Image (cartoon, rainbow, N blue to C red; front, side, top):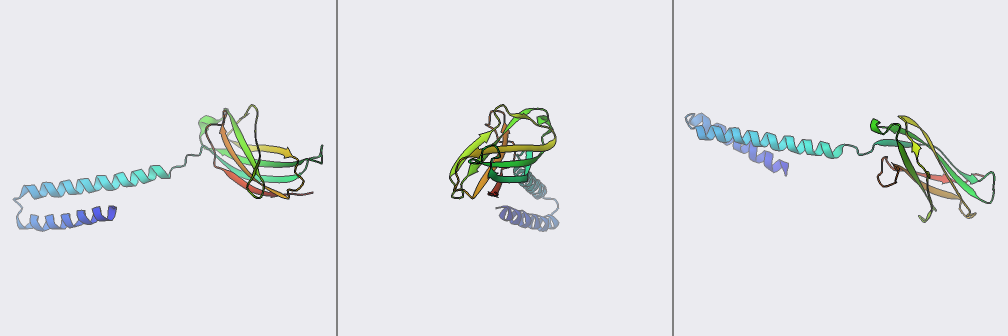
Length: 172
């Protein structure tokens, strides 16, 4: 779309320059040329500004995987526990020292949701650090699980971070 507009503006400018040099007394053509250049500038600037706005990140916190384990629970070997340590960096500093929450979903290899867990009362966020997510379940047939973690507001209605997915194999 922008190439058609640029092509039109280019030909309009060339035509107006040719006509201007033939008759400089024709003020209408000078005004038309000025208006065309002004409109093209506004259009291009607006298009680039709009694209830049869309490219901005909506994530207020960036998270990454520090470590992940999946194995028998020490206190009850009939249960398996998946535990993740998640590194975080707060990009929106207005969140520092506020209480937020995080959600971990655990899936079977076939994609079936096994369990969703979060912090009962949330936790206080700082500029950066490590958050632990852990849950356990009894299914001796599982040899691996997939996890998805996101940080949310305290009520778990607004996502604050990028999603973090990991595949974790059972270790005995």
